[in-house]
Length: 283
Image (cartoon, rainbow, N blue to C red; front, side, top):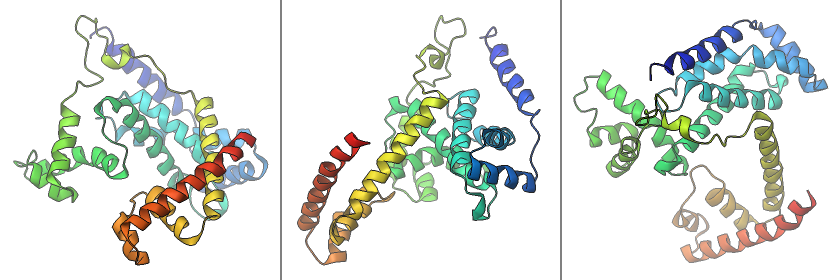
C-alpha cells in the first residue's frame, strides 16, 4: 500500500498542475470561441473551450469521490462529458458554456459510477439511480443535524420521500459488497479496481457511440411521430419518460381499460421495431 499511494497521488497532482496552465476565458472570449466552433467547426476554438474548463470538471468529479471509484477515472469521464457539451453547445441560447456542460459532465461521471458498481445490481430505473446517489448524501445531512438516527431507515426514507424497504435494499447494496478501492490480500498494495481489466471506451470510441445513439434516437423519434395519437402517447409516457406512467394512469386518461392500454403499447412497440430494422440497415 505504501508503495502505490505516492504514485496515485503524484498522478493526480501532476494532472492538476498541468491543467492550471490553461487560462480561464472571459465571457467575451468564451462566446467568440464558441461561435467560431459552432459556425466553422474550428478545432482550435473547441480546444480552448475544453481546456479552460478542465478545472471545473475536477470540481464536479470531487463531489463523487466517495463512491469507490478513483478520482482520475471520474475526471476522465467528466472530460468526455465536457467534450460532448462543447460539441452540442449553442452560443446563441444566451447561457454560459459551463451552465450547459455541468449536466453532461455529471451524466458521464454518474454513468461511469453506475457501471463500476454494476456488481451491486443497483438498478436501471431513474428512481433507483437517483436513490443510489442521494442515499449517502441524506445520511450525511441527518448526521450534521444531530444525527443519532443517521442509520435509521425510516428517518432516511422520510428525508428522501421513498419507502423504507427501498432505503434498506439500497443500503445493503452499498455496504454489502467490497469497495473497489479495497486492497487485495497479498496484492502488495493492488486494489480490486486495479485488478480488473480496463474495458472502458477511450474518448474516440465514446464519441462514436454517442453519435450512434443520437442517430438511433432520431430514427426512433421519426417512427414515433408516425404513430397514431394513442400509440404515440403510450410510447412517450410509458417507454421514453424518465418517470413512466402506469397502465392505470393512462387508462384513466383515455377512459379505457388497462388491458386495452397494454394492447396499444404492445402494438406500438411492434410497429417501432418493424420500422427501425430497415432504417438502421440503411444508416
